[in-house]
Image 1 (cartoon, rainbow, N blue to C red):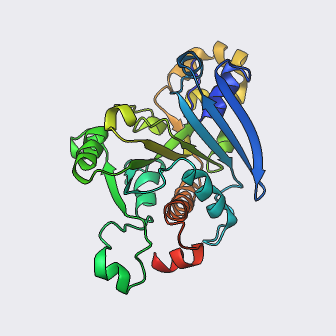
Image 2 (image 1 turned 45 degrees about the vertical axis):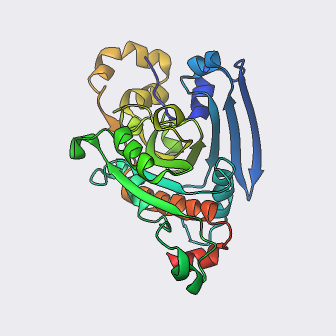
Length: 290
């Protein structure tokens, strides 16, 4: 049975913690555990099932607990995002997913909280004291079933038109463990497969397909049912129950507080993105603009 996960740290757990071509270190900031995993070779990427690149994971208290806009988590996650961004130039934030399906709504809900600034220029910017704002454009892609357009095609068409220095793609992810739902943020420069969190993989969106760096950000909101059963029962019991588990091969497990989880995760990511992209302003000033 293949255990499905979008998290690089879980892929490392499954492959074994000593994989040649993988660099890994952990550190703490503001009481948050942060791991930085770098896949340096194609062979290591095959073993982990991950593209070459850097994967930063921030482990959080549950997002269903108390959360405030002035939370130190915003500053910490913002700094980690900023480390992967180009220093200057226009950025395009793309919210991936279907807002009508709660566990897949993280991307568009996050996009709604990102400060779009590309249009604030010239005398308007100077007169309002906003001439230090970095230009940012925001789009929500919807899903192919709604638009008839592949997400990658949609993003590529916008990239060709406005020519950003990088794309930041936000999407829901899948974990192999329920306890990581709403407790983990993954940030990567390796791109993203739209719909991965719900098992509907599309054409990968990365530097090779889009033409500019793609930073992928997500929070796990679902666990594949078969993966959950294996994790809950243990591999030996799950393998003996294979016939029963196969009946749930298209099912996912979500926490009962999924509405609250996605709303707070979107707020956290949206505010963290603003802090990362608009570092000429402090958090209090950014919140007043939103």
